[in-house]
Amino acid sequence: MERILAFKKKWNTRVYLSFLDSKVYIAISMYKNLFELRTFKPAADYPFLEESMRFLILLTETVEDLKRIPFMPQSLR
Image (cartoon, rainbow, N blue to C red):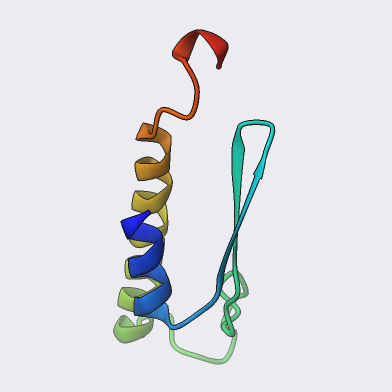
């Protein structure tokens, strides 16, 4: 939960959580096109690449943290 709050604070965005059938669904409101190519910008835009990498690392760390939370016994997963 701390990583979700850190993510929200760092990126100044809304984070939505939904719990359904012992699963957690996370939606993140972003004002950037994270998965679109930047056709008319240089590929070696290091500040952009660094920011994108920090975003992906924080996102994957959040998912890994959530995986470690024992929502239910291992035998029921």
